[in-house]
Image (tube, rainbow, N blue to C red; front, side):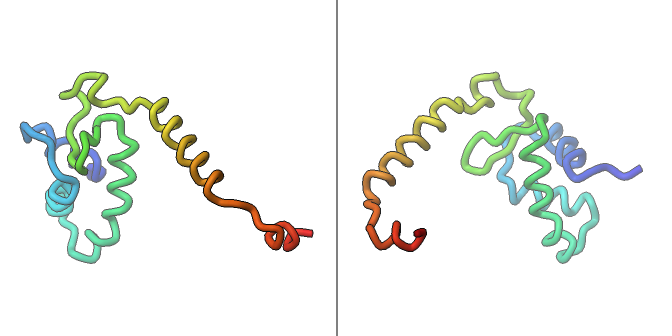
Length: 109
């Protein structure tokens, strides 16, 4: 039975001591999987999605990935409260800066 791309990535990361930039990790996984250039191009997006959803991995910033087990909880968890507040502030700024014109309202009537 052949391994999945993320399983191969996990095995590779267990051998490395430091985080790896995504494209370098992908090159190594692609080589280990025996992909030609077309297969590599076709699978990179799926690999990024898979590694993003796999709880064995964590992005530590600047598109560097590592095994989650090497990081503390606080290093590997994003505080979503900050994201929601920033998004709400951005939305409020957008609303305040965008006046509604009468012609826009008339288009819907």
